[in-house]
Image (cartoon, rainbow, N blue to C red; front, side, top):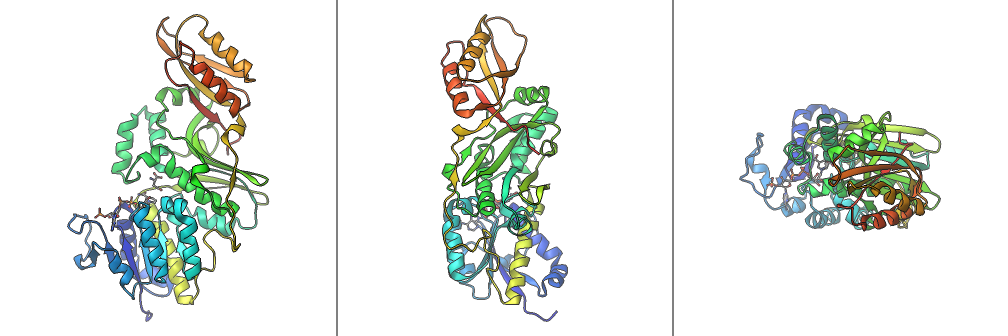
Length: 438
Ligand code: NAP
Ligand code: HSE
């Protein structure tokens, strides 16, 4: 192969960056055949050059100043896998302004500053690729932009955070401890630098914002999304869910209702027999319903070095092929050529309708259940099942109620009233139920 190599600058050499380097090294010849030219990493920016990396890399490649990569005229593609938002935004904007194509795995960057970064890429007519930002190794963004392009997307249900799915699976199957399992997820390279982003639902929200942007051709203000994480879930809730024939998963959900879009992230009870309920460990799955294609699902490893790097390298190959063909920006990042992408009109959570799982923590005294059910009744909420552990009178016990379909606004009002009862000893836990989840 006689073509000059496509030169890449890698910013970040942690879980993902190392994986990218390994793939480009190990599959150097194979990728050159697939692209039509070799790909070469010319520089790698890190915070600390002296850190032991556990992988053989010529030391001359490292720099502690990513601006060296920006200034290098030979580097055509910048791969941002350092994370964070402020510095990543500065880097992204400077990269595209310098005419370099950008590959990033940074969902927080795109969810919060996508409008600006995409605008800059369009103005500079450079490629911006970010497949690894959602679903790790699963090519869901390409599927939405290209494979499902003929369809209006009616709904999306996604398990899009590997850390949370790993924790919930371990808790549900092995009764594992929440904190210990989170620590293992961190050691395995699944969690964000601040794992609060994972367990509080924000990482999934960033991914949902990207999915919704592509599915509906809109910008999604992340602060308009309803986001709830998994911190308050207990082994008891997972156990109870099973008793009622459900599993609990952290889901990112989008549904289109005319001009309005439902977009929310929260722990969700889904039928134990559904396909998403069978998604275990770090795996992710995104179920998409299009008006012509019907239902489809993509499944695979959602985090970790190899799967994420696989998606990043897929993007590098796309950009490299475009460079050779002398084209760029042929498929716009949100799959839409519209000049003005509108802000999404997100439905308020209060107007959601569905069944709810409510766990009350109350003193076990005569008449408590009657008080709870009476308040629920006054708010038009009817009960389908009740479960209560045997307990001694005077102790705090969980009382679980599964409701029929109710309006969230009513459920919240009822729960607020119930929580003010003197016998209630903890804030009530509310989990939404999606009975028709695939
Ligand atoms: P990580 O293991 O924490 O690695 C971050 C890397 O960036 C480190 O090598 C660090 O340098 C370097 N870095 C940080 N700030 C820098 C700066 N100012 N200049 C130069 N280098 C800097 O993170 P990661 O897990 O690989 O994740 C990277 C990105 O990919 C994040 O946006 C994350 O959300 C996304 N992502 C991760 C996964 C996953 O499974 N881990 C999956 C999908 C997407 P030092 O090594 O010297 O500290
Ligand atoms: N922290 C993320 C997760 C990494 O656990 O899913 C993959 O985006």
